[in-house]
Amino acid sequence: MFMEEFLKMATRRLIINADDFGLAPGNTAGILQAYRDGVLTSTSAMINMPGAPERITRARSQEPSLPVGLHLNLTIGCPVLPPERVPTLVDGDGRFYPINQLVERLPGVSLDEVNAEIHAQAALLTQCGGPFDHIDNHQMLLMLYQPFAPLVIQLAREYHVPVRQPAFNRSARVKLPKPAGAGSEVLKQYLGLLLRRPLFALRILPKISPAGTNRLPERLQAAGLGTTDWFIGDFFDCPYLENFLAILEQLPEGTSELMCHAGLVDDELRSCGDSYIDQREKELAILLDPTVREAIQRFGIELVNFSAVQLN
Image (cartoon, rainbow, N blue to C red; front, side, top):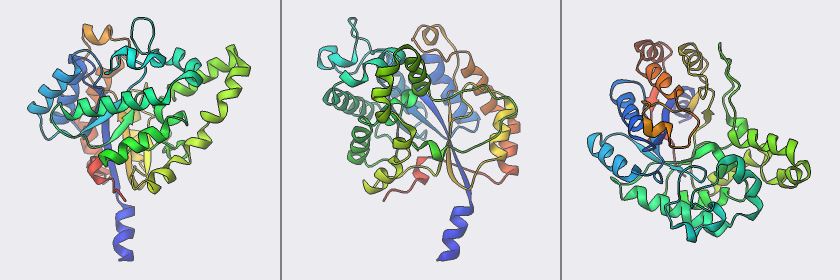
């Protein structure tokens, strides 16, 4: 038994997950291509965007084996619920506040409204081709801001699915040939807030600190939920083949998730309000590059999806 557990831990398993499934026609088509012809193993759906339910339903019928998770989102597009049901989350046009504005409004956000909206997103996704297999969240806000995290954990319990690794100290440390300084968008916005409104920023610091996030895996375990051993976000804004190969070479033992944002760029993507656009086609090209699949085989990495994450 000991030897079996040792061998299990010694295996390097990798989930390559594309966020934002359904965001626009181009990025959705690109994700399907990365799964069919490349090394992508999983995706997570942004169900609240205009046309997303129809796109996701159609894509899942075209590729029913593609594992789909729920990409919870409170910072781009409109809510699934009527705007009047979630007034602290939306502006005068009924749209979610962008991340830079929402960070300043966090103390006034209703937890009941957040809970209602994330449940509505989960319910809508299940109507678009079946159940989802994991939960993550756009720009990491829902797990980084401490009052929101229990809501996500409870939602995952209800659907009995794993959650993206939330702890900063479980982010795999890799050295990249071409670093681009990418990091958590929430933390970057918080640092900007610290410069503009230092007293306010210090007041919410205890609720948005990495120290609190690092305790979340224990809370997931106590809730009977699972997560990966490691999370790798270094590919974001660093879409270079050299970087991807370096990540593969340095992949730690255990199960890791590598977050990516592959896709094809179209007019709808450019107008959706997201700032990560042209990098998506660069990421897609890398996931399709035969050199990557050869490296995965050479390094003895097993490609998996979130079904490899054990639930308690």
